[in-house]
Length: 191
Image (cartoon, rainbow, N blue to C red; front, side, top):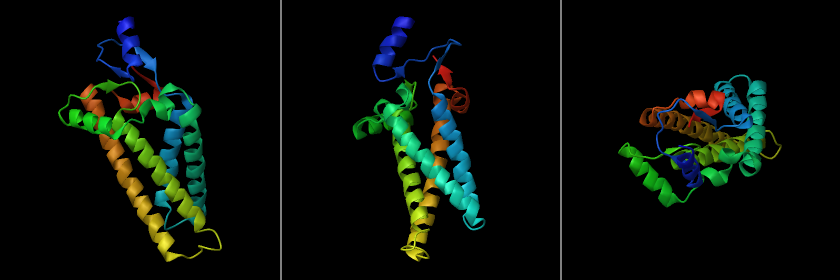
């Protein structure tokens, strides 16, 4: 089994299903804290968008700091946190998606190719939200209806991405019989 595991890990993190109770560390503490902090910060920002401007602004700056830290961690973090581990060519994403539609996608220890695309889309969208939100606090863009509409559109787009992300998590959990929410809490996945 150890030989199979090491050869699978050398082939991009794809592993065959294992019926053991053994687990391995996948998500480091930074990734887990980032993930759940972003969930809370976005929920607060979204829910206070038309109400408490101070809380909305603070949560927006928290989102900006979290995204900046995650982008840096994507280059210097642990193996499965690095972009090099989950950013793949569009052809591989399409191939993985087709396999998933037939419930024949290989299991990945870290993010699968579709998950990698989602991570990039979420980081880009949250970056856009943070930038447009910040710009609206400057003298140049204060009161700009156009920028406000872009910011609001990005917020709803982010909400849609979050919904797709949650669906993907549940779909992958069902396909591979794995509790991915628990893995993002404990940092451990089935070996």
